[in-house]
Image 1 (cartoon, rainbow, N blue to C red):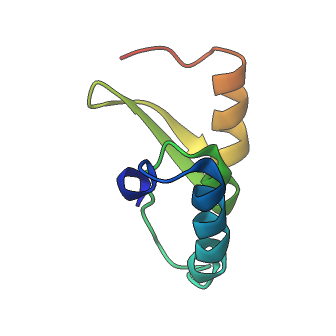
Image 2: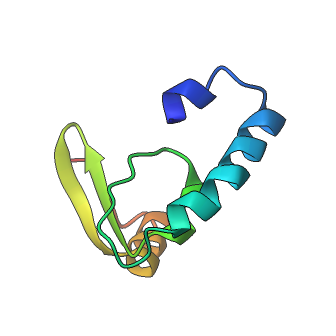
Length: 77
């Protein structure tokens, strides 16, 4: 979905993501893999896996990984 959205204007991207969020929330309690560069989707997830050069450089609960990223504690592989 991210690649498709790259061709759109920012306002249109935001509108499409807003419409997709209720659909994604229907899967609460189910395992879903979301691959994204969009921070707006992060509040929907329980666990984040950060990859760099094909290697996992961080894996954990959303709040923990986001804090580590902001503090620069997650480096390159």
